[in-house]
Length: 594
Image 1 (cartoon, one colour):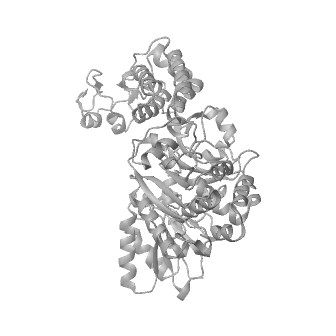
Image 2 (cartoon, one colour):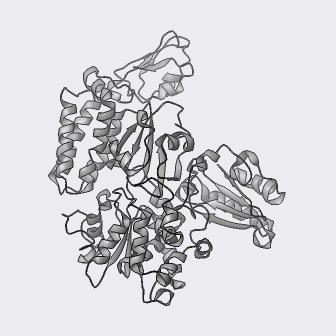
Image 3 (cartoon, one colour):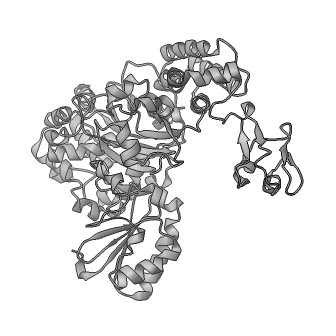
């Protein structure tokens, strides 16, 4: 029940909501509700997960019932206020999720299990009171008052929590190594340098519930004996950084961060380091170098950061999602957490659904769910309605899992067996219109540019691979190119110093493994089966279908289409730039791509 018998309106203002126009919607609600003078509460929250329905606005009735409106525009605000807030009549046709009602979007949530995201999209991330009302900082209090550092580590070990940054190393074991390392000073570092194309998991957690990460760092600090932490976040995440700073400040004012926390001998402070956006700084040793003010380049290991890390002191590094799981485990116990998942992969996993998913957004699912359940039951298949072809998983370091492996179980071992990796949680859906050679080229272009240049095999090897892929997509490929790509991949993976180079060939290797026929069609037949590579396709007008409406010639930017009104037109292939404008403009499907 809400206090004072008032309604409450909450606008989703994560980056996704703001990009869709959420700030304007919030401003209009603020103005209209102010004019009413009804005492209706207006608040904001982070990403609710249903990004494909932004702008999202939740209306909470005085009796506590919640209704979430989707695709809210400034024009809809007044109608929502008049019907729902004033007259108590929810506008069912605009509601995407609500108590005691069923909507077409229920399937998006039915198979989710929220631990990391339990407060995201519910609390105002700038309100420490709302976070504490939902158990924030209870776990660190429990740890300090009732558990030894060794017991905390044991609980994390028993939970089966593995690092969610991609490597999947047991978190408790990592903490134990840092605990056992000798040093008068130790550090906790949160890796928030999320850089994969199509990934927005960490950003959404930091924007929606920064307290989960702060508390996780505190517990990790207590466990290993560290009194200071750094959050390394890329500067391209200004909203996440802003909300982190607010959360840290408020926690300090409450005495939750700082000296002698909860009257104990444990003290902890958190600093924020803004990174410049270099993908290689997601690698642990490059990240540490960047914090120290050096160029972000990886170094040889051992020694590992747990022994000699930040400023040569023992350092524990976990990513955002890993740390956001910690408080739940300590508060509710390892057994409760381990109820989710498989024998070797416990708990849940957050995924960012991007690309051609019909329902793109942020989801958290139990380990052990199948890829098919995510693609069809949660994400609703492809946005184009065309046949699902593959999912790119794990970003530039990952690989493509084809539709024939759609029953793959989502756990570390099963995903690795496909040639892809779990990664930090990016999933990009591809349909039959995607060219897999072009997809491989896209990801290799990214990693080639992001290589720091320290390793010859990485910097030069990926450049040679990219040159070959570019030639193949231009129709200049030749026999032996596929084998050469495989040979280069093996050498780069074997001889690169850090994870960037060791995994850069994965998108190429998996597309060759599962879509070798597409490579061969590009090389032998000089054809792109998906009709995406411009050098290998041609636009043609079917004479019998063309009605001479001139729509195609009017939109052609290259003046490549000629013909008379009500007479069949033709395309001059020498002038055509293959932009597709003519095909989009044609209402009778007279234009084909060959």
